Image (cartoon, rainbow, N blue to C red):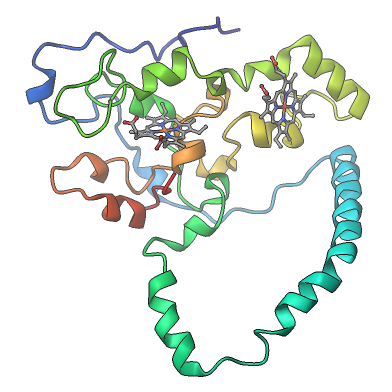
Length: 238
Ligand code: HEC
Ligand code: HEC
C-alpha cells in the first residue's frame, strides 16, 4: 500500500540549475508503438449487482424526466417553429467549438490511449519542485498533484474500512474491482486504451481531467506546439 505523500516510483527528481534553458524532452515518456494501435472499445460488462443499482438509478432518472418533460417540451416548442435559415447560419460560426469531437465526452470515454502519469513527472516537464521561471505554466503540477491533491489517492481509498463497508452494504464485491467505484476513484479507461506504463492505482491523475495523451504527449512539448494543436490532438480544454 502506498504511503500518503509521494507515490513510489514517481518521486520527482531535483530540478537542475540549467532547467530553464533546456527544451523539455520527455525523459521517461517513451511511447510504446502498440499504444498507437487504438482498438475499438467493447462496452464493459458490469456485475449483476451494480447493474441492479444502475437500473434503480435509471428508474429515478426516468421519474425525473417524466416530471421535467412538460416544461422541456414547452421550451422546445417555440424554436421548433423554424427560425429563418439566414439566422441559423449567421449564428452557427460564433458558437462552433474549434476542437476535436472527443470533447463532447468525458476524458475516460475518449478513444485515445492513456499513457500514464509517469510520463508527466519529469522534473523538466510537470515534476519541477519550484515554478520554472519564464515558463507559461508552473511546471510543478505533478508535485502538487502527488503531494497535495487527494485525487492522487482516490484509488487507495477503495481499500479503506469505509469503502469495504459501503461495498458490503451495496453487495458489489470488492470496491477496488467494482466499476461503479472505479469510474470515479481512478481514470478507469478500458484495458485496450491503457499504454504499458499506465497504472490504475495512480487514481484520478492528469489524463482523467486533461484527456488521454496518446496523440498529444509527444507533440505538446515541441517548440512549435500551440494550444489549438493540442486540443485537436485530444487535450481537453480543462
Ligand atoms: C460519482 C463519483 C463517485 C462514485 C461513483 C464513487 N465515489 Fe467515492 N468519492 C467520490 C468523491 C468526489 C469523493 C471525495 C469527496 C470529498 O472528499 O468531499 C469520494 C469519497 C469517498 C470516500 C471517503 C474518502 C475519505 O477518505 O474521506 C469513500 C470511502 C468512498 N468515496 C468510497 C466509494 C466507494 C466504495 C464507491 C463505490 C461503491 C464510491 N466511492 C463511488 C466520488 C465517487
Ligand atoms: C481533478 C482534475 C485535474 C487533475 C487530476 C489534474 N488537473 Fe491540471 N488542471 C485542472 C484544471 C481544472 C485546470 C485549470 C485550473 C485553472 O485554470 O485555474 C488545470 C490546470 C493545469 C495546467 C495549467 C496551469 C498551471 O498549473 O500552470 C497544467 C499545466 C496542468 N493542469 C497539468 C496537470 C498535470 C501534469 C496533472 C497531473 C500531474 C494535472 N494537471 C492533474 C484539472 C486537473
